[in-house]
Length: 192
Image 1 (cartoon, rainbow, N blue to C red):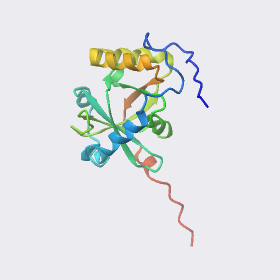
Image 2 (image 1 turned 60 degrees about the vertical axis):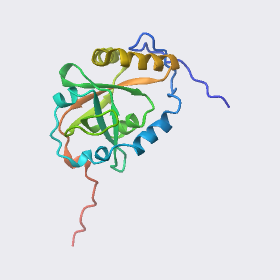
Image 3 (image 1 turned 120 degrees about the vertical axis):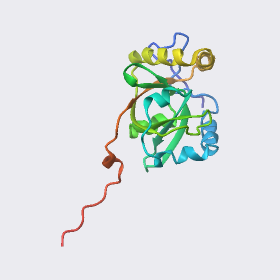
């Protein structure tokens, strides 16, 4: 049975984009799994480092390592293009069905650190929270990313537009977490 996709009704932030709801990059899941298996050693232990990073350190690097968390608390590092925007926020563009976005829907907290293209951390992580932008908010993120990455990103994004991949933008806001919320809940001690 052939899956039928409907065009997305809201106008995209990129004029050439004509995304189809639910459409993924061919072999995206396979590529993500291979990247996770070949991640540099420091990427999986980034959460154990002191969370003393700064937005300036991340903005000075071409890539950022996003560490999102599974429901069981397992950290999942992902290198991405991230651009600094107004108010000290970072912007990222990703597939709407990407694992990192699913994890962020369950827990908006993440760590962000400067990294290499393969995800090797180049500094301490920064605590932050993230949210998916509404379509009318996306042009701000698109401008920040286009200004930061220029022609290389434009070529990549035109490919995504041509394949009609369902993409969205994430806004990352630096801020200290409430650490008690990350700890698992424990049952109250029994009264004697």
